[in-house]
Image (cartoon, rainbow, N blue to C red; front, side):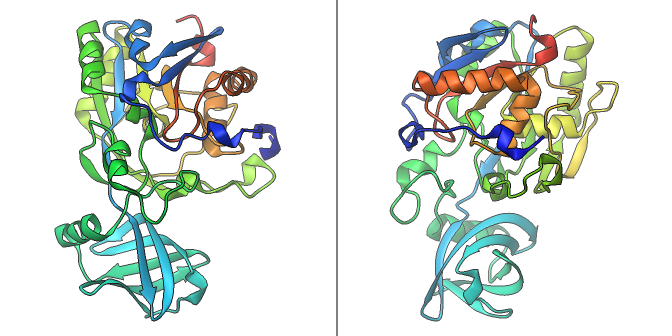
Length: 346
């Protein structure tokens, strides 16, 4: 397929700059055999006792930094951890940098340039571990995507808005945004319904926002992200399927990791490592039966993924409907609940 097949026109005013409050008051578009309008608090109505919701419990770190090399300004967004104190970053102003240059963020906080590959730069900080996290908390900002406009770094409100209520494992540089709709109250209602919870960790990288620059979908190289699925989650998911229940991925990050660890026979296995799985129409899903997700960018790998999951024509129809009916798009926007195309009546 051509990348142009996944293009659509989105009015700028539909790009959400702030989330609604409370989080679960956002709209929810149910995408199954038809389309129907709801609110995210209605989510328990579409699930059954015994279903397993799989959440990504990654925690976003303040990975956006502004510094200087000499008098030249440099803007850094960390996106992949490479070891103690070493990160690969997207850098605005990368052309100004040379190997062994030092970027100063604050008097006691700096990084040395170890390598360059276009706009990607490998940096070794003068701090590591907990000390580096403390410095990022003090001097960094939440790494908001480029379509959320702020003066300077993200503000104080973003520190809570751009973090899920179940965030636990530090390492993401972008939020698993489908999870941003959940509140403690909604989670409690889901438990009362008999829905089971499972957790995976996929440290979302800033590469998720990179544009697809090729003409043919098959030529795109997917970015890699680190993920973990433990045996507790494996047992919950496999037991649910054995008993005829559904596995509901909260977000495309959870889905990508589950499908990376799924065997062809539909059995989930434990996983720890990088995944660069690229899901496009024609992919045969092995693990996930339902998906809750936000509305994604045109021509993006995520719009390709949801088109694979619910059907290409169905998603084109759904996005056209969402635009016409004022749904808010992207990270701080509204949500959708998708049934898998081959399970549309379940």
